[in-house]
Length: 188
Image (cartoon, rainbow, N blue to C red; front, side, top):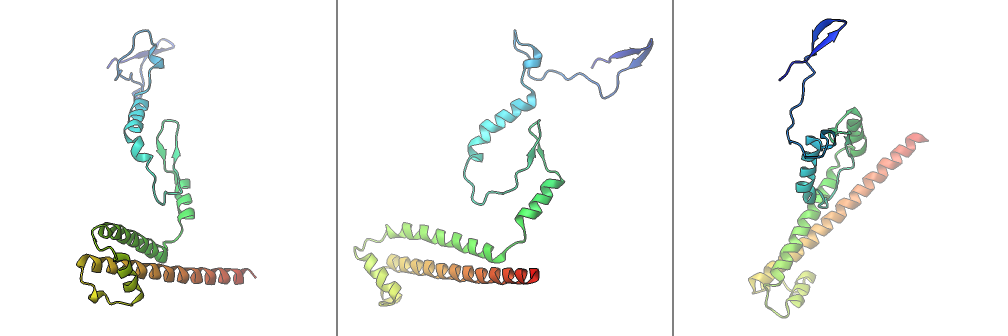
C-alpha cells in the first residue's frame, strides 16, 4: 500500500490513517472509465437477487406486516422505529388463534390423507358406506374393508376437527365482544 504525503503550508504531513486506496477487485473493461463500473456490493446484490429471487417470490402464508427500511446501499436498517412498529402491529400472542391455526393445518393434512386413501378403496359403493357410517346408520366395526374403515375414521376426524374449530371461533368471538364491551364501558 502506498503512503500519500500531503503538504500543508510547506510542512509535510502524512495522510490520515483512514485514507487508503481500494484495490480493484473485479478489474476493468477497455474503453469504459472505472467510475462507470458497477460497485462490487451491487454486483453481489444482483447475484443474490438472481439466485434467491424465485424462492423469495414464492407466496408466504401470514407474511409479516413490518418491512425493514432499506438504505441507499441496499442494507437493511433495523432501527428503533422498526422495533416500535413491530410491538404496535403484532400485539399480544393469541393462544386461541394459534390453536385454531394448528387445528386447521391438521384438518388440511387429514383431508390430504383422505384423498390419498380414497383412490385405494376399490368398492364402488364406498361413498354410500361412508355416508351411512357418518350418519351412524352402520357402525365402523361392521365395515370389513380395512382401507374403507380408515377412510371413515379420517372423515370422522375431519368432522371432529371442524366442530372444535367452530367452537374455538365462537369462544374467541364471545371473548372479543366482552373485551369490546368492557372497553366501551370505560369510555362512557
